[in-house]
Length: 99
Image (tube, rainbow, N blue to C red):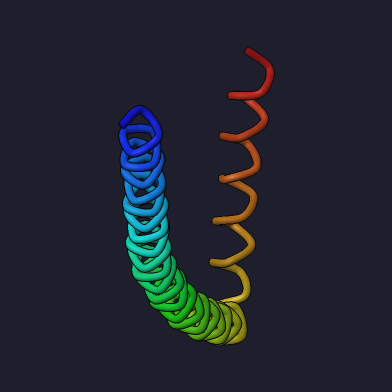
């Protein structure tokens, strides 16, 4: 009778081990799936931010070119006025830097 009880106990331990192993595998699979979804979301967000940064860069470059063109036109049309403005700005900046 003792050997029958040992065999039953050993079989129970084996099936418990199998159930625990299967549960562990399922938990790892679920965690892996969640990690993959998170990774996809992060990649998508990074691509979106990269696209927005490129658009902002292009817009800033275009605006800078427009301002440069406008400033050049102003200097060509009114060279003495532009010189006086530059001189005045230089005086203000130098007086601020002395302090």
